[in-house]
Every structure is written in structure tokens, then in C-alpha cells.
Image (tube, rainbow, N blue to C red; front, side, top):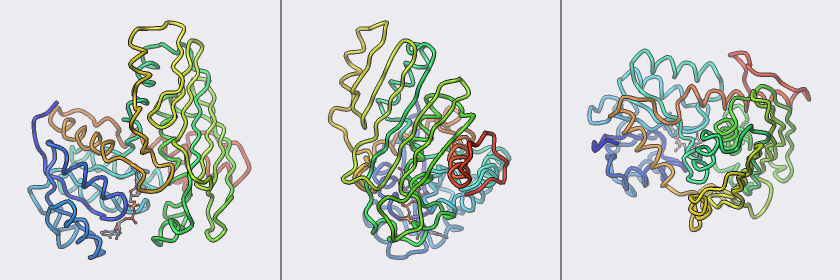
Length: 354
Ligand SMILES: NC(=O)c1ccc[n+]([C@@H]2O[C@H](COP(=O)([O-])OP(=O)(O)OC[C@H]3O[C@@H](n4cnc5c(N)ncnc54)[C@H](O)[C@@H]3O)[C@@H](O)[C@H]2O)c1
């Protein structure tokens, strides 16, 4: 753990920037230096709320030597175009999820990081949720035995206004739609907990947002390389929206969480510390179910502080771009499966796109 404080710059002062701003301001390991956005009003609101300077441009942000890490908070199809120059300028980067919209663009970021000996972390903060860490530790510790099933149920609600708020939010190739935009956290979580995926069978529908040409509902069956199976149901059509539910079953155990709350924690080898695990998250419920700002900045703070520690210790961040690339591959496979009505095998070709 580092005692260092590093300088942070922000590009993109939209909806998610409030969580990055609050996380940086509240972390002793991070100092907000400056922010950039094409939209003057959003930039002013951000700087007035969280401090830091108004950068005249993204290039000015990159030229600022006080900035060690740039957080890329632009729309989904605009991540590499900011991350690659930032890495070339010698900055480390935290990129919002998904890493990008294509594997090729993700690879460009990975390659730029390697070339410049810099670090990239992808902001998939749900992996750092305490309940998820407990399940991951139990899996890694062998308590589940052979994994059999990993499921995620994300029954959320977003009103039509959400999709019309910004131009990119209703365009599939820009990164809109429940699969790539909302369920991506839970695709990533199943990958993180259950391991790599080898086959996907998916269906997508629009249940409650006829004004936009997008899927608001996803159902997918997954086969993991380990032989385990999984289901993902994700929707933004289901009012009022509930915290997401994760279920993991192995030969020797079952764990079920809803948001941060652990509903079931049953293992053949019961241990005294299991009592504490059942207490996790009793007061924390902000997990995205009911609206786009139904989140806690603390999860973003973990990602930010992990980057500071990774730089100080010269190790990989907890969530690397290489690892998140496979989650993107799973999401792309789901779109291909839904579009063609076929079961899709991974790996996908590098140029696979939505
Ligand atoms: N980790 C999470 O839980 C989470 C939650 C919400 C959003 N996100 C991700 O964060 C990213 C941003 O989402 P959002 O909801 O904040 O989007 P948004 O549209 O609200 O904000 C994007 C901002 O980028 C700015 N921008 C666009 N082009 C720019 C350019 N050329 N130069 C400078 N600024 C530019 C826009 O003006 C806008 O203010 C997306 O990748 C999204 O998937 C992640």
C-alpha cells in the first residue's frame, strides 16, 4: 500500500464523472489537477463541484506534468482515441467500461501501454464489491469445489429519457443498449468469478422502450471453459429496478448475493468467519438498479486507489485491459448470437464488432 498522492486529470465530465470526482476528492491518495470536456457547461459544473482546473483542451491536460493518471470518461466508442495519446504522453490511464467497442481498439490501448511502459485499468468497479470479493476468495480457496453454475440477474429500470439524454445513448454502434452498457458489469463479473467463456447463446429484445432501436433486455446462456454453465438475464425495462442478483453453485457450496447483501452462504465446510461474511453490505444498497446515478463513489475510489498502489508497487492494476478484453469478447459474442440466432464460439476474430 502506497502513501503517495498522485495527480489525476479527467476527460469527459458527463454522468459518470461525479463518481470519479467524489472518489478523487475523498481519497488521500489522489489529487484532482484538471478536467477537460468539449461541453463548457459540463466542464464548469464538474470543476465547481469537485475542484481542479479547467484544462483548455485534452492536449493541455496531457501536457500538464502534475498529472500522473488520466481518467477516460468519454462515450464507449471514444475510449481508445483518448487512452492511446494519453499513454503516448507518458500518463497512466483509468478507462471507463467497456474498454472499447472493438477488440482491435482495445488491443491498441494494450499495445500503447506496453510500448510506453504505462498502466491501464478498466473501471469495472463491481469486481471490487465486498460481497463479490468474498465469493472470489471462496472460489480461489477451493471452498466451492468444482464450479457448476454461475448466474447473474440484473432486473433494472431506465426511463426512455435516459436513452434520449445524449446522442450516443441510443446508438448501438456507439455503445448503447443494455448488453454493452449496463449488463457489461455482470458479464465481466461472471467471467471474473467463473473463468473464461467458450460458448454463448443469446437473445435480445426491446420490451419497454419502443422509441429507441435498441435491446433493453438480454437473455444469455454461457458455457465456461471449466465446464460450468451460466445464465445472464439483464434488462432496463423492469420497473422499479432491483439490486442485481449473483448466484454461484459448486459441488461443495452455494452463494447468492443481491447487491451487496449476501442472501445465501452455504458450504459443506462451515467456518467461524462465515458469520462475518453474512453481515457484509447490510447498509449499502446503491448498485445501479433504479437509475443511472444509483451508485456509490466508494467503488470508484477502490479503482483509483488501486491504480495509485499499482504504480507505487510497479504491479498490474487489479482490473487490466487484457482481462477486460475477454469480457468485451463475451459481449460481442452475445450480439452475434442474438443477430444470427446461432450459438457463438469464442475466441472471436479481432475485427468482430457490434
Ligand atoms: N463504471 C460505471 O458504473 C459507469 C457508470 C456510468 C457510465 N460509465 C461509462 O462512463 C463513460 C461515460 O459515460 P457517461 O454516462 O458519463 O456519458 P456522458 O455522455 O454523460 O459523458 C461523456 C462526456 O464526454 C464528453 N466528450 C465527448 N467527446 C469529447 C471530446 N472529444 N473531448 C472532450 N470531452 C468529450 C461529453 O461532452 C460528455 O460530457 C462510458 O464509457 C460509460 O459506459 C460507467
